[in-house]
Image 1: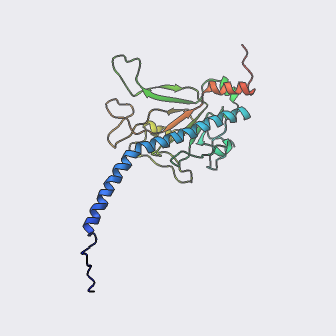
Image 2: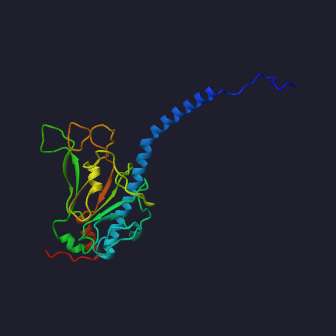
Image 3: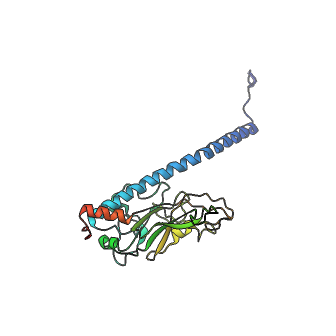
Length: 259
């Protein structure tokens, strides 16, 4: 025996292995690209389900305590009501008893509450001039000759509380496990998404809720109709003052107004 194979077999060369790996890489890239929209849609549905559980929990907390919970200021999941209470913080998920402390992308849910609603909701419901409003964008019905898509209009007035996920890109969000707030890209400040993350704790605020749009790195604007929308994937939900008052009355927490 001289050590030479009797059948003339040989192994793959490095070039052949590299070519096979290149082809496999192309196939995997195409597969991932095809699955990405489905993955993102599943993550959004999962986050919306969490937010809906939070909405139910907020109504339940209000019916039990006659107020809405204060925000979580230190990240432990419990509400922090010690004065001076900050109206903007993280969702007090432990206080509410919800299972998920954050969204499907591992970021904390932002929670903004009107200060009056966290102290005495009956007074809040009957008062006017709440400091939270929700806006969206779409066609301006007053412009009958031009179809617009960026007209800003009111979607919710005097809102008692808002719950917000910073979406898949996570810009403006903070990881559930701790860590610094994630900064947005250049030019992000002043966009609808940037404004949602930059609003100040105890001042009147306008939150934006609209359909998601994917940025491509080119020039964009959320107001200029000649440019594409900037990236936006925030998921926003808010409580209705009327629905909240209905729950209070049914729970006997607020007396029915005199006719």
